[in-house]
Each structure stands twice: as C-alpha cells, then as structure tokens.
Image 1 (tube, rainbow, N blue to C red):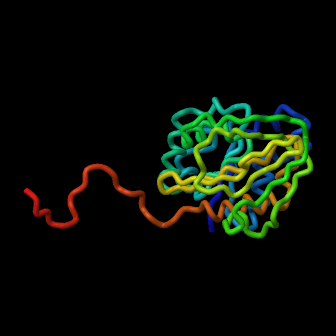
Image 2 (cartoon, helix red, strand yellow):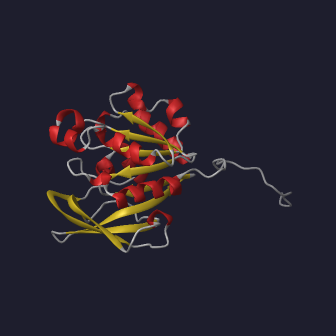
Length: 239
C-alpha cells in the first residue's frame, strides 16, 4: 500500500473561525479522511517537532501532499533540502493551492512561482486538457467549483512536462491548474483548487484528482542514477 503524508501548516484553522467551520479536523484531516480507504495516510503539521517531517517520516513516505499559505518562511531551509533530496530519490510530491509559494515548490521549480489572484468566491470551471492522463481518470470533460479564489496567468513556473488541467474563472481569467514535473527519480503534481474558506476538498472530483495523483506520483522501484566521473563499460582502444 502507498504510504502518504499530508502536510499542512495548520495556521488558518487555529486563528480563523470561518476556516474551522469548514475544516473542523483541519485541511490535513479532511484530505486524510477521503484518502484513507485506499492508502496508508498520516498527517504532519508545522507546529510539530521538525514540522512533522523527521527523517523517519520522510524516509517512510511514498507521496507527500503539501498545503501552506501564510507561514512558508517558517519551514527551515534544512528541512526543505531534506524534502528535495527525498523527491530526487523518488518520493512523489503533490503541491496544493497556495503551496505554489512554498519553499519546496519554488526550490524545485527554480522560478518565482508568482501569479495573479483575487478572493471573490467566483465560479471555477476546470477543464481536462489531457484526457488520457492517469490523473484525469474518471473525470468528465470538465468539472466546476461554485466558489473559489481566482488564480490567473501569468503563472511563473517552468514549462510543465504535462498540462493536465486548465481553469477558467467567472471573472474571465484562465490558469494552468494541473501540471506535472519530473525531478530526479521523483514526480511532482501541482493542483490549484483549495482556498481555506471554501469546502473545495469535499468536492468528489477534487478528491478523485488527488487520489489519482497519489497513484501517479508513487515511486518507481529503482535506484537514483550515479553521477560524476565514470569508468568505461567497454575496453577503450584509444591511448
């Protein structure tokens, strides 16, 4: 069974009653609950020792799900480096919503990861751009969220390896809302929806996307390539 760790900074839930009403068990608890039937799932939060991301936790995680917003800078560079190394060694990483500004995502992307935004609770229509992709399995041509925060282009990320979803918003903007990358042995999926004051993670299509992404991002069974100076495999005839 795939071992999943759901990481959430868990700050909005502590200070904002509106968020607590939507996610009484925290965003991490809600995601854990809908994944628990198919995966081995644990949670980790910012205020735990080592941010809940000890070597033991990271080394036993197949796929790490990351939600952060107001406390990105509180995650130490040391832990970010450890997460990066785990991704390069094969751990899958799923970055949700405002996690686009997390240290780990920006480090792996090498860009600002900036974008336009507007918090108006408008409709979002999420179009399936790659219907053959495993992350889109079981979805229709599109699905809609009645109320969401708008993210708009330009999204300052590298050209994705795969564009799975594109969003259209009631205000007219569009956004690359589901993109994949490979880094080392690891696979990365960024998925846009998930503003903390809206019940996005109760939506069945959103849940399906995240569950599909966990399966897609799970590690392959192989060692990381060896780099550096290499001895020849065959006898060299040159002097």
